[in-house]
Image 1 (cartoon, rainbow, N blue to C red):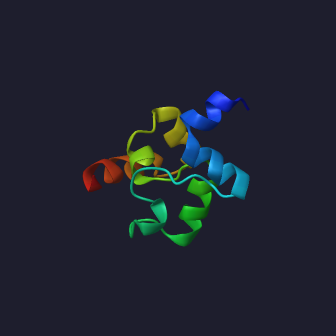
Image 2 (cartoon, helix red, strand yellow; image 1 turned 90 degrees about the vertical axis):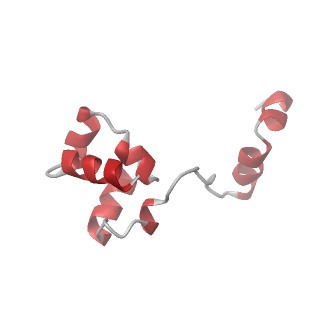
Image 3 (cartoon, helix red, strand yellow; image 1 turned 45 degrees about the vertical axis):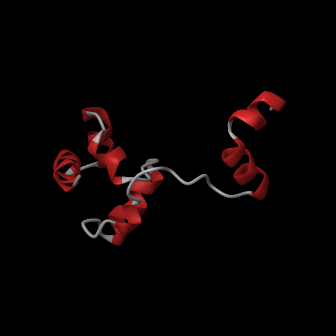
Length: 80
């Protein structure tokens, strides 16, 4: 990591040093009432952190979500 990186992304660097995850802009999926606990765990395992990310997922990602992935994307889009 260069000094330039530290100055370009100070929040991310501080979070990295503290061992914290950087907050993602958007609606956290934990705050979205539509997601059941099991589904929340699965979405997080696939790397989704926000409703906006779910709304923007492509067909391949919707397939990785499993049965109902495309419907979940549609519901996320309607939510936003």
